[in-house]
Image 1 (tube, protein in one colour):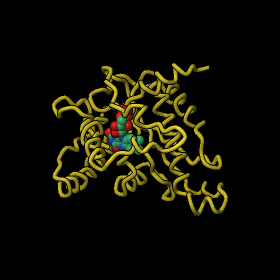
Image 2 (image 1 turned 60 degrees about the vertical axis):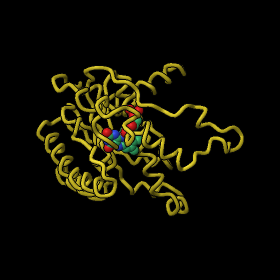
Image 3 (image 1 turned 180 degrees about the horizontal axis):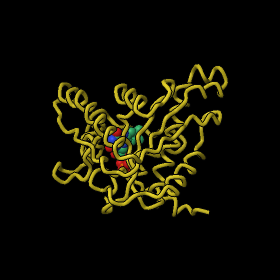
Amino acid sequence: MLTIDELYDLAKRRRSVRGYDFNEGKDIPREDIEKILEIARWAPSAGNGQPWQFIVIRDREMREKIVELYLKQLEPKREMEFALRGERNISSPGFKNAPVFILVIGDPRVNEAYPVRTREEKGFQHFTTGLANATLLIHLAVAALGMGSQYVSDASSPYMATMLKAYLGIPDYFKIYELIPVGYLKKPISPAPRLELEQLVHYEKFDPKKGRSDEQMKQFIFSITRRGAYGKKDNQRDHQDRA
Ligand SMILES: Cc1cc2nc3c(=O)[nH]c(=O)nc-3n(C[C@H](O)[C@H](O)[C@H](O)COP(=O)(O)O)c2cc1C
């Protein structure tokens, strides 16, 4: 049985690993991928609908095609970022050398597993939460095996999702949820900052002292989030892509 301290260590050790941390030379055994996905299938899902399917992509040519898609869809993303915010710091795919990509896709027909009112009110939310839970378990399992993974959420943007369906023969009714490159780390990376526990926890009632003003929220966004480059100067960043 995992102890609470081991769980804490695992939660803290899981990192979004990007770029140079992957080592193309070292392949991942199929058994490890199966262990990871065996864990993912125990994720909780609304109505036990288990909306997930996992596509494991090892083929180098296909991975390269996926990286090309990613780069192509970055163009309008960059343009929009610059047009609205004057910011230019969305950069290229650090995940390109990961030896395995896992694509998490969801079958929305499982929403019939919910009561009618739930399906109508919260169908999409429940479906997405199930996929998110399986995705998180994948990341944790990868970390437990001493490897690294990351989210490539642009996989679900309309252009990339459509093309992924075409390349991988995925039926159109599926939702492309998340692309997860998996690989070995070349060197450990430092944790991204988190808010302190005392800033987040309210006992019995919402504590107004912990409510953040718009100004405080702005400071937060431009400091320790990815938009604020985790509070580091640009030239100190060890993370290249942005969510
Ligand atoms: C829903 C979701 C989408 C994300 N999308 C991306 C993404 O597209 N690219 C990326 O590099 N990181 C992505 N991330 C990773 C976050 O940037 C990352 O979790 C956060 O900066 C904290 O860093 P950590 O995961 O190393 O603790 C995503 C995370 C979540 C939960």
